[in-house]
Image 1 (cartoon, rainbow, N blue to C red):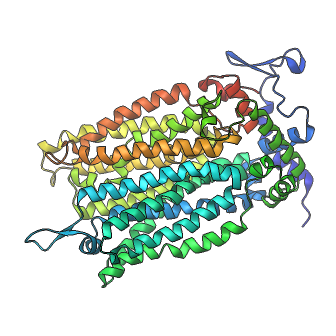
Image 2 (cartoon, rainbow, N blue to C red):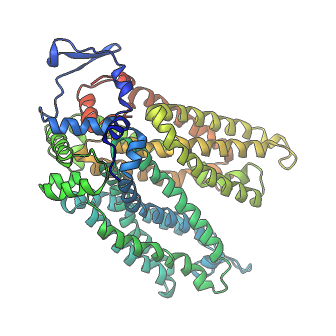
Length: 558
C-alpha cells in the first residue's frame, strides 16, 4: 500500500509544536546569540557547515513523534535486542555462580566436609576468589572492547566474544573431572569474565548508534530488562536442576543449557548490521548507506542526508580529540562527559542495590522466615520488570534528569525507613510484630523505584552523554569503574549484614549507610547531571562546548 505522504509528514512533525512555541531569542541574524532564562547559548552552531541534507536529516530525526519512530524504525529495535541479548546470558551466569555456593550438589562435588556432620561447604575464600576472578576478567574484557570495536567493528567484536564464551564455558563444565575442581572452576570464571566484559563494553554504544533519537531511551532501557530476565531464568533453571537425581548433572545442566541461546545468537550476530557510525569513520560510505536503509522503513528517510549528518558530527568532535581510545575520554569537554557517565554507573552501587541482590538474607535479618523471604524476592523481581518497562514511557514524558532526581529522593526515603525501623526490631517479638513486614514493604518499594528510575535511566544517560566517537571507550571506562566498586561491595556487604563476630552486626540498619551515600549522589546529580531528552548528538556537543550548567539544559534553545 502506498503511504500518504501528507499524513506521514504531519505525523513525523507532530512534535514540532512544542519547539515552535519557544520565543525567538535570536539577535542580529544567524550570528547572534540565543538566550534561555538567565544564560545565553551562542547561535554560531552550524556543525553541518551549511549542508542542507544533513540539517534536514537532523531535523527529521529530532521532530518525528514516538509513534512514527516505532512504526518505521522497529527493525532497528529488533537488531538492538539481538545485540543486547548477551546481557541475559551474563545475568544468568552471574546469578548462577553465587547460588552454586549454597547448592547441595555443588557443595558435595566441589566442597569440603564438616568433620562429624556429613555436611559439605565451600570455604569463603574460594567464594570470594571465584566471584572476584570473574570481575577481573570483566575488567580485561572492558579494556579490550573499545580497541576491537574501533579496528574491527561491533559485529566482529560480538562474534569473538560469543566464541570465547562458548569455549570458556567448557572449563566450568569439565572442572569437576579434573581433581582440582575449584581451581579450574575459578579459572573458567575468570576467562568467562572477558567475553562478559566485552559484551558490557559494546552493547550500549551499539544500541545507541543504530536507533533514532526518539527510541534511544526505550532501547537502552531494554538492557536493564534483560538483566532482570537473566536473573529470573537462572532462578528457574537452578530450581529445576535441583530435582535431578544425578549430582553431576544437577551441576552440569545449568552450565550446558547456556548453549541453547549462545549458538543461535552467534548465528544472528553474523547477519546483524554493523554500526553506520563505525562504517562512516572507516570510510565505508556505501556500506554505511546500505546499513542506514536496512535499519528503517521510513518513506521520508534520506540515507545521504543521514550519512552527511554522521560525518559532520564526527568531524566536529575530532576538533576536541582525535584520540578514540580511553585517554580521549579525558580531553577537553570529554572530561565532563566522562564524569557524568562514571558517576551515573557508580550511583547504582552507592544507592544500596546490594539490598536487592541479598534480599533473602536482608529479609531474614529483618525477621521473616526463609520461605516468606523467597516468595517475596520472586515477587520483587517480577515487580522490577514491570517497573523497568513502565520507565520507558515515563522517560519520554519526564526526561532523564527529573526521573533520576526523584528516584534518588524516593530511594533515600525507603533506605531511611528500613534503617530506622531496624532499631525497633530488638525491642519487639519479631514473630508477633508487624515490623518485619513493614521492612519488607519498604524494600520492595525501594526495588520498584530503583527499576523505574536509576536502573534503566543510567543506561540512557551513558548512551547519550559521550561524544559519538568515544561511546565505546567512555562506556567501557565507566563500566570498569562500576565493577571496581562492585568488588568493594563484595567485601563490604557481608560485613555489614552478618552478625558479630563474623561481621559488623548492622543487619538491616546498614540501609542508613546507603542512605548517606545516596544523598551524596543526589547532591551531585542536582548540580552536574544535564537533561539530554530530545537532544541530538550535535546539540549535546554544543551544550557541552558552551559549558551550559546542568540545571539549564532543559531551557536552552540551540
